[in-house]
Each structure stands twice: as structure tokens, then as C-alpha cells.
Length: 91
Ligand SMILES: NC(=O)c1ccc[n+]([C@@H]2O[C@H](COP(=O)([O-])OP(=O)(O)OC[C@H]3O[C@@H](n4cnc5c(N)ncnc54)[C@H](O)[C@@H]3O)[C@@H](O)[C@H]2O)c1
Image 1 (cartoon, rainbow, N blue to C red):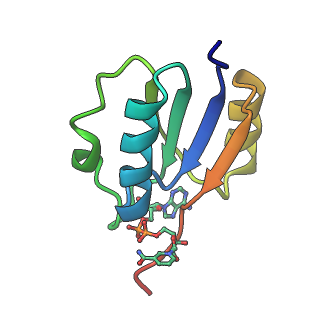
Image 2 (image 1 turned 180 degrees about the vertical axis):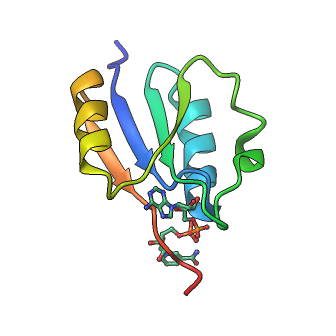
């Protein structure tokens, strides 16, 4: 039996996050993968163009420092896990 999980990946449009999301979406089709990214200079949704139409993948544009937005997202989706990769990594 396959267990369904809802996983939030922050910074998923970046270098590491996009590779991780591709792996999760393809290897765990019964999981719901949500990509939360602010789309800064480092974020590029083209990194995920090959999986963007998958039914187990959702992109939401937002900032991890926006507490109101994050609270609402958590209220809407009961995440089982969070992988935090959002960062200003080019400084
Ligand atoms: N790339 C490496 O070699 C490496 C090595 C060790 C650790 N890390 C760490 O792994 C993490 C990810 O690295 P990366 O290379 O994928 O970075 P990246 O710069 O390619 O991606 C970061 C992503 O975070 C997003 N982002 C930035 N601020 C945000 C915010 N406030 N809210 C939401 N999204 C936001 C950006 O739009 C971008 O898509 C970083 O913490 C980095 O320090 C990276």
C-alpha cells in the first residue's frame, strides 16, 4: 500500500530544489509536492518545465518571511513534511 504525503519544498525553483522536486514528483506519484518560491534572481520555473503539468505538482509564488501567507498555506494544506531550500544563496 502506498502512503500519500503532502510535502512542501521551499525554494523549489532554484538549483537544488528543482532537482529535488523533479525526483519527488517522478518517483513518488502518490505524493503531493508543493513548490513555494519567491522567484528571485535565482529562481527559474523553466527548471521544472518538464514536470509542471504533473497532477502531483503545484507551484505557489510566495515568500517564506510572509507569516500571514505561510499561516494560510498551512491552514489550506496539512503538510506532512517541509524541505527548506529557499535562500539568498548568491551573496
Ligand atoms: N548549491 C550548492 O552547492 C549548495 C551547497 C550547500 C548548501 N546549499 C544550500 O542549499 C540551499 C539551496 O541552494 P541552491 O543552490 O538551490 O540555491 P538557489 O539560489 O539556486 O535557489 C534558492 C531559491 O530560493 C528562492 N527564494 C529566495 N528567497 C526566498 C524567499 N524569501 N521565499 C521563497 N523563496 C525564496 C529563490 O527564488 C530560488 O529559487 C541554500 O540554503 C544553499 O545555501 C547549496
